[in-house]
Image (tube, rainbow, N blue to C red; front, side):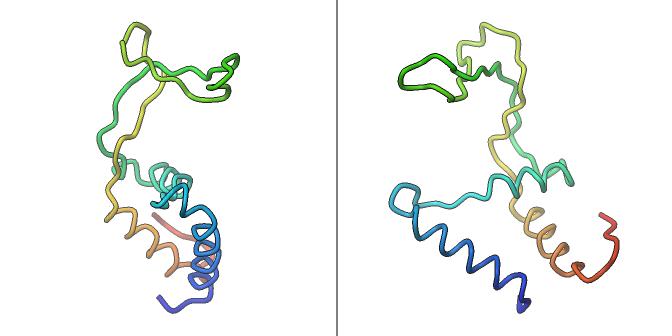
Length: 106
């Protein structure tokens, strides 16, 4: 798409990805994907229930989310393991094409 907003986002993402490519060879737009799922829940695929806690006291795991794989606790989160990239792509294209409109009906 030949739009200034797309060029700006591409430039920003390229610079960010270039810095972290050594540690993270694949770039995943987690926040954008979750925003898309909020707008179009059918984007979420393979959703499973888990019990999750945040580790606050560990020396090596402080601040990490810990999942109970033993299933010994009541589930308290839904974990999205995959998403429909085609619906997400359609949503992104729709959003860019409607940037000039005052309202967007999804």
